[in-house]
Image (cartoon, rainbow, N blue to C red; front, side, top):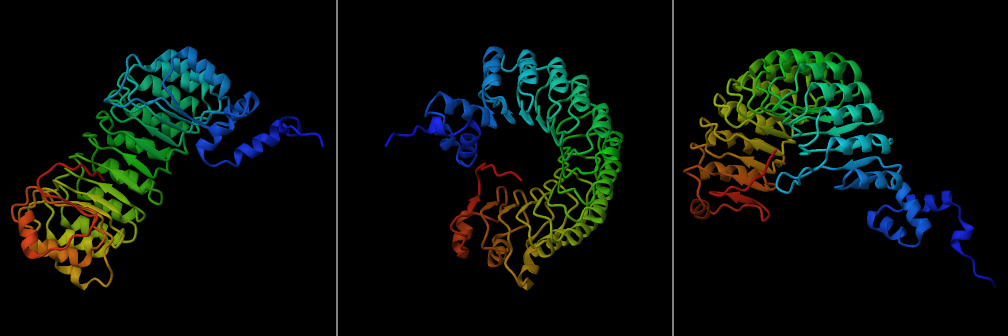
Amino acid sequence: MASICINDTLTDDELGSILSKLENDKDKEIFGLVCKRWLGLQSIERKRLAARAGPHMLQKMAARFSRLIELDLSQSISRSFYPGVTDSDLAVIADGFRCLKVLNLQNCKGITDKGMASIGGGLSSLQSLNVCYCRKLTDKGLLAVAEGSQGLRSLHLDGCKFVTDEVLKALSKNCPNLEELGLQGCTSITDCGLADLVSGCRQIHFLDINKCSNVGDSGVSTVSEACSSFMKTLKLLDCFRVGNKSILSLARFCENLETLIIGGCRDISDESIKSLAVSCRSSLKNLRMDWCLNISNSSISCILTECRNLEDLDIGCCEEVTDAVFHGLGAMGTEMRLKVLKISNCPKITVAGIGMLLDKCNSLEYLDVRSCPHITKSGCDVAGLQFPDFCKVNFTGSLNVLL
């Protein structure tokens, strides 16, 4: 009986169908090692790629990976290389990767508006763009992206300090399906810009405006009302103009809110936080409110008892909080789901308070008690406190766990 060669029997479409059923990337790479034909098919079917390459190599990659959907050219801060990705590279990408939907250029500090114009002109199918800390970018280049890539769903511009409200206007006009927007440190963004944004982009579920110092209650309230049913993550770290009006608006409109960061918003007080706890009792999972100096026991106790799905809580430097914040936990019928608790520099909390917490929380994975003079390792040992086996307790170190 004559042997049958699989390459003579199966068509490219049939081999491609087999390849598509391989879920593991390593298996797909092995598929491409069989022969040149299978390597070509594996290259065509490849959807994701992370690389560091100049224009010549990018052209070869574009010819080989013609159906690429995700391209990651990001650099790490500690291991960036010079000059890195350039405008010439972006021109090749815009011309060669026409199917691209996700492009990550984080920390590619050499790119300018010229490169963004290429992206806007060539990648009409783009849905996600990350240009965080590409510090040379201005409104001009990002306006080209908003106008050319109108299917954008995710845009991250953290650290792009030259970005202004004009970009938000363009997004509102051209990108109605936008769901994620990162603007951390874009200090020229104002309440008016946010109002313009949500007049057209009403499906935003993630908004990071940390350290946007010109944003206040008016802008946050407008966003919360316009994106009420969608908003899940809102980051407002060090937005010192944000106060109780913003929190009350979130409590009124955003009942699906899961993550809220309001650290450093020092005008926020107990009554608005209690309203938020009641409204978001089923959804709220992560709350960071360190340096909210007007916060006291009543609102934190409400958060702990009402928000049964809470996993991460940071009340560092809320100096008026005492052990009394844990008293209500004894009346809870179910175990808490809290995994991370940060109470650094809360000098009125003692070992007794931690004991009350542990009685109702077996899921704790990280506890930050730095600069709490009444909570020490020896004090916890003397009191016989039993922390969960997997729990890391930070008494004096700098273990970094972020919300």
